[in-house]
Amino acid sequence: MKVLRSITIKVPSDLKALDLVLSKFNQVYQDSIPLRDWLQCRLALAEGFTNAVKHAHKNLSSDVPITIEVQLRKTALEIRIWDYGSIFDLHGFITETAQKHDDWLASGRGIPILNKVCDRLDYYRTDQQQNCLLIIKKFIPRQSSACSKSENSTLTKNDSKNKK
Image 1: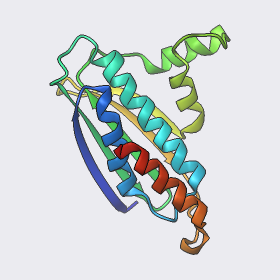
Image 2: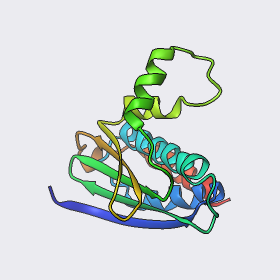
Image 3: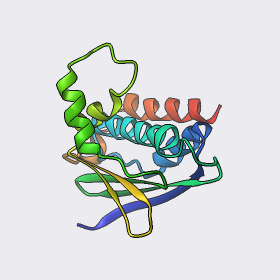
Image 4: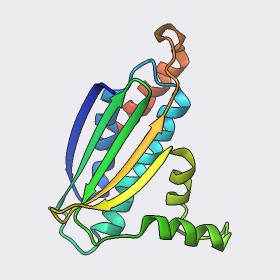
């Protein structure tokens, strides 16, 4: 399916870069994306980026970059987050945390949440010794005129907060 919009973001491995990542991500937004799906994608991106910094790159210099690729298609958003950490068994982690049934975990809840809100969640190692977290969220496009003023102002407010 044809790519309508695409961006690549390369940032240092630093949580302070999250605001920039989310601000750049907003450039991909189109009125055809339902707000709920868009916000779930923002959540997925924030969680994936945070995990790359905190876990995949925890023993690496902040100079080691994290690269994010976003592709908007007519009925889906694809997010790829590239890191240089050790390989991680995503599906094993999801299975393990599902078996714990512990609502009071201090951490480890983000990936199961991503697994629920995304249509596809995968993590794989490339031949270039990089890992890629693949997040795909499908949606039913809205008519452009269906985007309400309140939804547009929500995006604008969120973007303004990120620039402060």
